Image 1 (tube, rainbow, N blue to C red):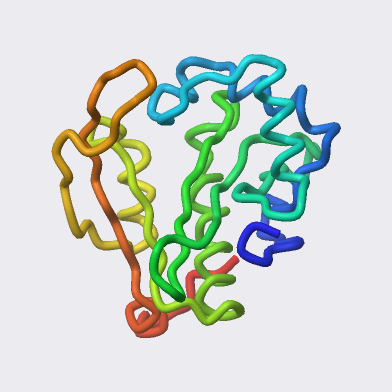
Image 2 (image 1 turned 135 degrees about the horizontal axis):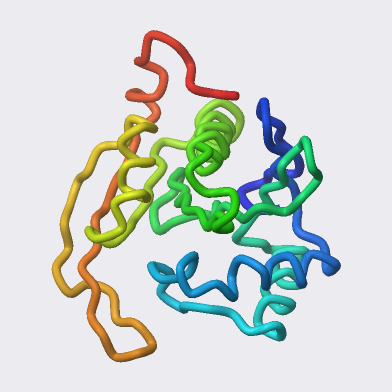
Length: 184
C-alpha cells in the first residue's frame, strides 16, 4: 500500500487503505474549492473522487485515508509514496474544511514520518507546497522539516498558470537526532 502502510493509529486518527465505498466522502472534501485550492489538479467531481478512491484502494496507492477515530468519518488523505531517489518518500495532505485547524495534518504526518524512518528505514522524506499556502508550510515547520528550496515558476497547473513551490525535507539523521520521537 502507499509506502507499505496498511494501518496506523494515532491518538485521534486512523490511517488506512482507501476503499471503493470512500468515493462519496472523498468528493465532500476534494470537491471543495477551498480545500483543493493548492492542489495541482484542483477540484474533483464525483466521478473523479470515485476514481481517486478506487485507484488508492488498488495495488499501488499513492494516498492513505485519514479517518477520525471518534466519529469514524473520513476527514481527508495523506499522500505517501516513493519520490525520485532510493530511500526517499514524499508526504502531503488534504484535510476537509470542517476538520481543519485541529492539527490532524500534523498528527497524521508525524505518524507517517515515524513509519518512514522507523519501519521503512527511509533516508529522506520530502514535502512541497506553494509559498502562499501558509497552513501547509507551517505544518512542515512543526514537523521539523527544513525548507531547502524556493523554486520559482516550477509547477504548471492545468489552468496554464505557473506556481512557485517550496521544497522541504527531513533526513533520517535529523529525525533520530531529536531529543524525543515525534511518532503518535
